[in-house]
Image 1 (cartoon, helix red, strand yellow):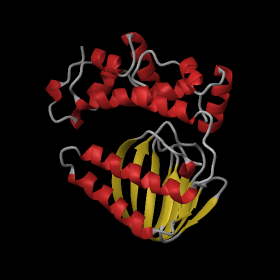
Image 2 (cartoon, rainbow, N blue to C red; image 1 turned 30 degrees about the vertical axis):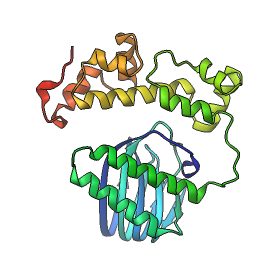
Image 3 (cartoon, helix red, strand yellow; image 1 turned 90 degrees about the vertical axis):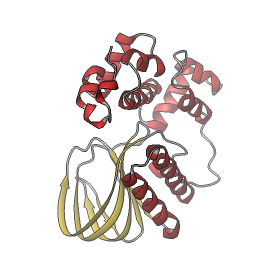
Image 4 (tube, rainbow, N blue to C red; image 1 turned 45 degrees about the horizontal axis):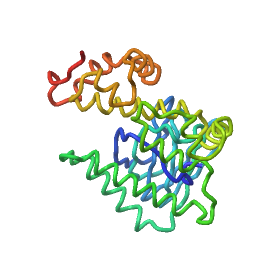
Length: 264
């Protein structure tokens, strides 16, 4: 369950406000997740197997690659589009908050921050998003829930994924369980293997470094936890669909000074 996760890593792609009336909209093959807060709504979201009715003060999570149809008499919401290796896939989740006075200002703040594009805005937006996620967790997760056996190891991975010496056996050791059991618990909780999770953390970080325009691709590889550039390049292409050099070329328009990007 997305709203019961204690922590996730993410990369914000966009924050936007949507105000529509009498709409019938089909969303297909989106490769990003979305978290939204509806100020006022009379909306139905339909997937192939489920139908969800969303009203005022609803917070909804839509995972990536979930096809759905949105039918609204009226819909006033703020939506955050983001990438994450941590979210469960395939199922839409939502709840009606009992504290709209908490969530409404947070969503308004992240929208204003994103649109303002002031220096450091991505850091500030990330901080606000973490606060939103913390409030979602506090409203949905049972306080008495026992921590997972692998919680400390996952936190260690999130903090140290850039270390090239970080391995799955080391993470299992930190949870005082066997590697086989660690892999089993991790897949049950996150839906993917710990190795794939680690790779996703590193490649997403590498993409952010490339986007900054301050590092050569070989420097990006080292800073992301890879000693072998060729191996890094293969993993990057597997995760992102294009090579690191093509990523620089395709996204160079996002950089204020294209000529500063070093690709060798």
